[in-house]
Image (tube, rainbow, N blue to C red; front, side, top):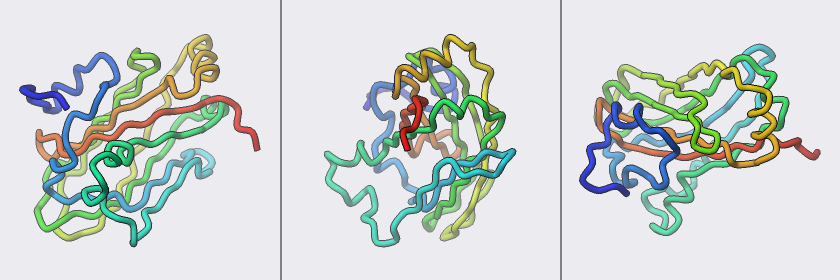
Amino acid sequence: MQTGLTINQEYVRNLQEITKEFLCPISANIYNIQFLKFRIRDMESGQVLFEVERDPNEESIENIPPALQDEARRIKYHFGPQFFELKTIGAQLTFSVGDKIVKNFTIIERHYFRNILLRSYEFQFPFCIPNSTNTWEHIYTIPEIAEDVKQLMIENPYDTKSDSFYFVGDTLIMHNKAEYDYSPINE
């Protein structure tokens, strides 16, 4: 974790490469925002590309051993090369909020291939009622990517990465990381 730096929205918007470490501790989530369900789908066909739902009996990330907490903030996706044919995808997130009001819940997501920024996305949920469960779908337009870069992305699984930063106001409360594999899926 970086010390002495103020990690705000402007800071992450200006990052030029994937972060090497998490920019906030688990304890920064003072709003007790918990992700319950996540689904990625093709907006044209409605086909679900990925879906995960939290087991209600699963231990909260704050309660797992510190050595495992960073791994719990990482996810790997295997979408296959056909992903590049899609125009827009929807990412639906169901989340719960603790006993504090959440104003201006903002996600800034930055996608890189080998530390070259492919696209930055930003979404805002203006207000969350305390002790509520909310569903939020954000729509991603797939960026135009040169054919030679697509081929490199297909040939080099998990060299495509993203940082997802979650803010309440201008305070970073969560940071997750993802890695992507676009190689053919063997069924």
